[in-house]
Image (cartoon, rainbow, N blue to C red; front, side, top):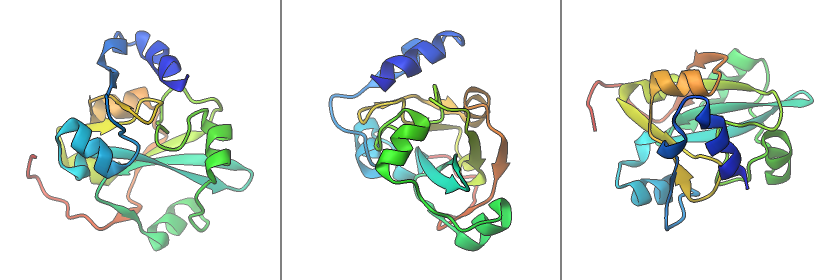
Length: 162
């Protein structure tokens, strides 16, 4: 099970006990927000895209949508989501539990600026009912972030803490 691989991955940082399994599904932004009792924007959703014959992950705040113009400017191609089968093949995680940790293949992870307005965010942890609370700095470190990008829309940057 991918959650066990994620727990094992976090052992190197002494964070394995920070991976939380919920009694309810956290497979969508809305379900995760409800399970964690936080606003949906604080859910760090991991989106998987096809780039040529490979894939990339973009982690973004839960209240965002991909801005196709920004995406194309950043990555040089149109945003094309992986199918659930491709996502599992490239990441080792099933849709609903895709996260930027303990990846099956060496694929690049990008973090969207939309998350920087929060002290902490909640990415999934390898299953459809798991998460881990991390600061943006921790998320950057533990995801082996290639770089921070600005490829989303639908949120307003502000310094309000939720």
